[in-house]
Structure formats: C-alpha cells, structure tokens
Image (tube, rainbow, N blue to C red; front, side, top):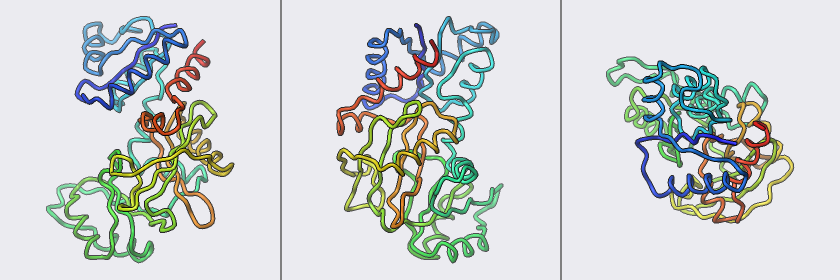
Length: 291
C-alpha cells in the first residue's frame, strides 16, 4: 500500500518533524509506503499536470497533516481519498463552525456567542452584542478567537471593560464569547480518537493558568476516561466527520463539556505521557478502511 503525507511547506520545527517521523515509522510497521510532499510541492505538480486525475501519483490514500483546505479539496476533486477530509479540517479549524455543528448534534458545550462579522469597522465595536453576551454568560468569561492553536488567542475576561478592550484589540478577526467552566479551571482531558475508538487519554493541568495546554506551561499525566467522556469524544468526531482527532473535554460539576476538536492534533506529548503511539492507531485505521 502506498500513501502520501501532505505537510505545510512553511512550518518548520522540531516538534512537527518528530510527529512526521512517528507517522512514517508507524506506516512502515503497517506495510504502508508513506511519501511526504509539502502543500507547495503538491500545488506545483497539480499545476504542471493541469489538475488531471491522480496527477500527484498513485496513492491509496492521502494523510493530510495540514490546514490548506483548498489543496485538500482539489485532491478530493481529482479522485484521491483524503484523511481527514477538506470539509472536516475546515470545520475544526474554525471554532465557531465546530460549536454550531456540535450544538446541532446535541453535544454538550459551554454556552457560547459568536461575534458579528465586521467589515472596515474603523475601531467600532458591537457594543450591544458585547453587553448582552457578558450579562448572559456572567464574568469571568472566555474570549476565544475562532482561529488559533495550542491555547493561543484564548483569554479570560473579568469584566465589561476588559471585554471591550479585548474586542478592540482583536479588530475584525472573528471570535467567540464562552461560558467559563470554573470547575475545570486549569484542567482538561485530551482524548485521541482513531476510527471509532479512543486509543489514549491524558489529563492536562496548570496551576498558574486557566488554560491547561502543555505549550502554556501545563503538566500532564495518564488518564482513564469515563464512559460519558468516551461517548462524548466519539459523538463529536462522528458529528465532525473525522477519521481521527484529538478531543479536549472540560470537567463540569455535573458532567463533561466538550471544549475543542482538533483534526490534526499533535500526539507527541500524549506518547511521552502514556507510552501509547497514536500514529500507529491512525495508520492502522486508514490502512484498514482503504484496503
């Protein structure tokens, strides 16, 4: 079996290279030849071949480890099986779309309000929206830009003055205002899903920040999820049409809340924490469904 691994031409870091090496090693164990190409290289080949069917080469599937959804969509259009799909990656990348889709599916989430779209606002704020959302959610609340990774661009807002100032700083970028789950302050669970199974989980915690992300100085330890947490993670992945994902869950006083779904979740920290290699589960799942 032969597959392509698509990565981003412009993201260069040891953290990403470790992840790609783990995917390649897992593929070798499963008898899958994994050929790496960047998104720029893929677009070059597509252009030279006039976007003809299978113009990248003969692949049983494409493991798309990037957020270049235009490329993913073009690869699907010319006949490749792409995982995760362009539509699923795009829906996960935009946290407001994730929220709406999971809400429709009945997955429990913190109450959230999506910002109005702004055009050339020259510093003007949607004051009525901000005041109304602040009263409904109460303070503190979470201000979360809809695009961002590793806990970046997520802020805890303590009062209306802070809310207005953060909205001014954010400008025309889209954001969400979200209920703060006090019982989960500095704590969450990362569950790795492959297929219809949770293959690994860890507890992330941070005594110095309301965000539990390891990148922000958090710590981690192995975790055994409850039946409700596993069910929530799997329901979220099905609702988002994901073949694999990292799912973040918060601790509510009366049960879990879904926080985020990551279509291309980094799993090196999860491996260091649990000894479970998510790459092996992802490749095995893709090999099975594409055989």
